[in-house]
Length: 255
Image 1 (cartoon, helix red, strand yellow):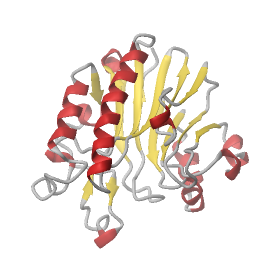
Image 2 (cartoon, rainbow, N blue to C red):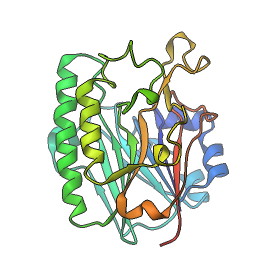
Image 3 (cartoon, rainbow, N blue to C red):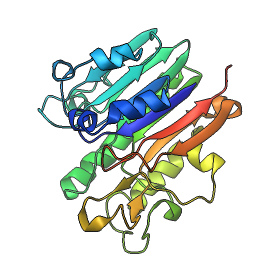
């Protein structure tokens, strides 16, 4: 099973820039999308359905903002939109599906780049997210979590760890949260298979950052330790250019 994740920075724009071609070529069983910035009625689903995908989309209350979605080639046992926490669900930051006992979570963590107020919101969100996923783990043994975490975990994950040491996305408190969260029983799929590889998943549109590969690895495919023995591949597709992010994927063997 191939599961991919992609912050598309506007699903309609990404589709105009050739996202369907990438989907047709890669054919993941599940694709988690973040920052969709649209409603279901604004998307022509016919081309996706022709490829065998059903689109499940969770839009934010604010038009053109945030939002997550999951494309699946298999009929989920259940689809759940939100965390049951209105403060966060207004921004449509999390949804999940169940596929034959496997829980696939699509998440879009807030950015704190706009200032101290949003950094505080982000840190509060991280604790709420941790608590929510702990609750899910009471029901699901096998969990895959895909999305834009807006955090670089280690120095290898960011092009300039010294200059960015006090920038949201690489703050000590954000990185410490991530270390503690992984310790609860989660595996960074890409880093597990490529412990020393330098690869990024997001580049600023400014200063030709992508052309100079001045990037950040803030997008993750993460699995519960119960799935460690099934992890076959983990990749970052830096050649895909439908967004300021690029898609990431993992492949699991059959149980």
